[in-house]
Image 1: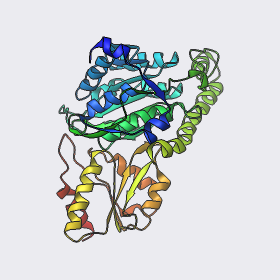
Image 2 (image 1 turned 60 degrees about the horizontal axis):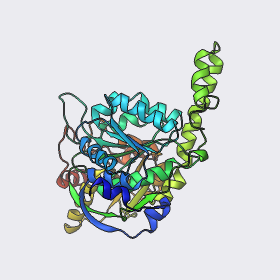
Image 3 (image 1 turned 90 degrees about the vertical axis):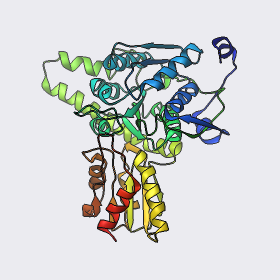
Image 4 (image 1 turned 180 degrees about the vertical axis):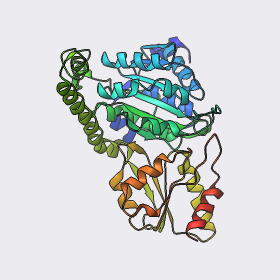
Length: 388
């Protein structure tokens, strides 16, 4: 489609609820990277800023095409990942709806900006395509960067597949832009497994757009230096009283955390809950996020064929806010809780253990990293070792 055609195309703006929950959809056979671009096409984004890093690069290249076609008001490539996140922060402070993406080492290079986004209550949506960051260098799928971002103040959603990625990005705007929330969202997917794999994704018509972002409803006036958090960030640094500085900063930290808690009802509405549960009465429960969910589904299918039917699955969609009560309830009848992960540290297992009583039931694994795959046989073997 050429630029002239697109610029003349009529589009219809609708609410996020209509887009996500009511609109009829059509099948598309696309990659996860293309699903990101399709979400941005429909998100009515004002500005996107890019810097290439594998496996994120393709998605932002495609978004550059959207800009050339007239779907985005402004777009450019910054000089590095930190510059991207600082500039996208400025665009959001100015009252724009913004989007960007990064991966692995790019996430770490930009790390300082993520708590700044949260501390200034900006509803930025950023896509993360998870990859290895450790030595020896690896571009392969690994979710360790989620662990680094857990306490930055942003909401964190973890997509199982390209469909999730599309839906979660659009839902991210709907949730983050709620006046009582208004903090950033990181939407994560496992690099290559999702970004470079084609699958069927159900898409709303491409002439639909989200209603424009209304910054007048935001709790933070755009570029207003006399209201929190800008004044709160500025004044304590110039104030001689440590007490005033501590009180201002600490109080605002609590408000950011409270905003994430207030997001729970909106996550339930737009994403159908923080978790999904299959076979809730099972004695063995697998708790997983991202593509570990897909591998767990396959393991459960194979075990069922082998006569082992007492295995259930908890798909964790929201990592921040974390579904403590939901997981506690869903694992109440389980004698074994398995947490497969694509990282060395086992951050999801730690979160699960901290959420439930009798956490000796939790097996922190199996875990693979450095780009290794997680065959269903490995999950089955771990369950048999502990239960059968």
